[in-house]
Length: 295
Image 1 (cartoon, rainbow, N blue to C red):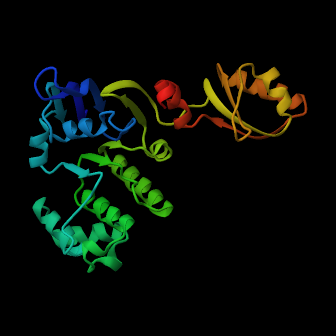
Image 2 (cartoon, rainbow, N blue to C red):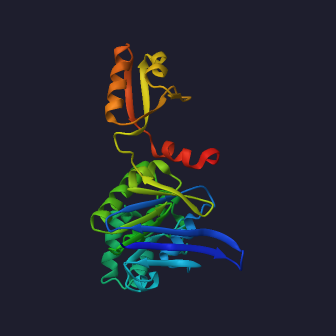
Image 3 (tube, rainbow, N blue to C red):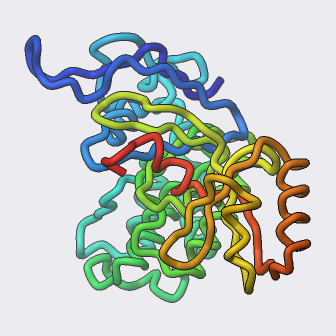
């Protein structure tokens, strides 16, 4: 495993103090993207800081590729995109990225910076001061600095913040490339739709405690589905007992497996209904029951 939290917890202050994260065990393998989600104050930033070695755990241990995080920092195998990426306003984009590449002891820092700028669409603003950039462009500079070196561990905090739809898509491609190269990616985000597209697995945090873990994308078969009809809605309750009608006119249904889903859909169509779409429940819909009334 490239990222391991072994009953790692964090308390601030003397006992009883403030418990930011209760003992948590988490392992992220090479080639895996794991997302951490939860409301504000859930402990996401604390978990990332522990994984990066910026905080020392009060209990348990954190290992990156089998070593303490600080050892991996020295080896240059960790890349990090903070939630609020910032650099001195007077620096130019090119100078900032070249300087950061040099600090990482990258060979040919100029070439590394130029390559990162090209990948993140920054060539046209290379000579502009950081302070003149839009929020979305500054976020792309942050992404570029995290992609300066082929790090084995990539930690991303709210990576889609400020990005337009085109660059959200591009970020997915960049993350997929890094995962394909064998990196372990740990990210935190409030954007559940993007988490569903980016991640393989999701950790649910609340009040410093893990509420559960689930796949980012629902597998076909057992579980919850979203059903949309062009007509025949009056038959849904009869065919799918327990179906819930949402405000947008779609239905939330639950089945035991793909055979039951197929049989019930056939029965619904046999009653004259016209199907518009059926899909597994989105990540947001699957997470909400875990948080109850607080979701």
